Length: 548
Image (cartoon, rainbow, N blue to C red; front, side):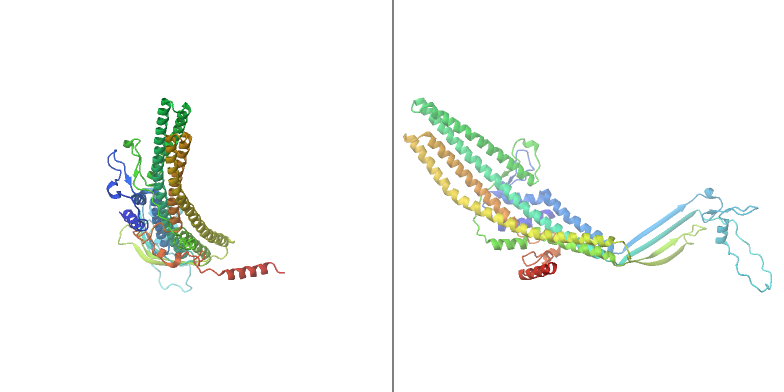
């Protein structure tokens, strides 16, 4: 349900930006999960919605966001209290140890005591004083009875509940901030995949439409050539034309048939390709029937574009750049976390322990109490281990900034390429619209001249080829315009309008100025220096490095 609401929110705004002229979209749509004879039919909007719900690449990108949320919880736990309970129970058969006192055996003999007896005696009776009194005793002390064979308990147990808390270190908190940037990066990667998916579905949908139209064009050409062949055969039988005219018509017809077969095959392949993008499975019960059908025509809506404004909009809106910004900020936190290893680490541990009596197993005769520990450590000398890690992280940070700058240039290149392709296809469409009209009129005149006996069959065949070429070129130009328009929208970040209807997928930080990627900021989001400042600083470095 959440994925459905996500897709519906995106598609609702997408439909406002890209109104389509497709008819019958509501009445002809079927899911394709019914009987084998029913083929799912899609309009462009329905195809996009289905892809947003079922495309595995987009679903994987969503799971990546969830994974990074788990990383945040895992790393954040290092700074939160940790409570652990530990219990130990031990039972030893007395037959294994004999007379046992606290885990040792004691046997009195006439010549001495076996090992362990001294330790046992020390635990059950007071040791003799090693300091002698110089004064004589006032009275003789009565002898104190001693315990020689005290039996210990064969059961021992202990329970402890200890809690630990990190007080301070230099690594955990930068690592936590870094995980938030990792989550933001995963979110912008999701948006980038979504934009690319919409552009891909549009291109594949239009490819099906243009292949269908090419089939129609080739079928018309085949029908015309068949009629020409039949006409030449009738004329040959009447004796008005030579056999050469019939052979020429047959060759033209059989040369046209491979183009029709190729167009039909391209049509089938394009539908299979779109079905895979939409996440549709192969249905064996349909046999060789197509996996889907599309409803719609090839639209043509000329758009006036200001290239400079488009490039600036692309820089500000492209999720691709915002993802690169998040990677830069994450690497910055990794540098701080690595350098934080030089700072002291302070932790505290506290809790209670319950230990059984050594001579009986009664719960009422246990030792219990509380303990508290404060530990601290600081590196004094590590032979440069931390310094080496810091150097590595700083290099990775510099690489991330360089990559960001290159990504900005990549966005500029993609927008300029899409703009140039749009202009090319728009000019092609204008030229071929007139050319189709001229080629159609030329074919009509050639047929009229042939019927009147003033023309030759070769003129008709050439006119037919010219008309087919003009129609095919116009269709390809229409397809090129619509596919390049979809690519232009993707490159400028205008493929769909985001109102953050992502069902808690959009982190709050992604809506802040942290991820403003316009022309006036650098890889870290800081204001760029002016060109004059950069030039002056470069000159100063040059003079410092190379004095005259």
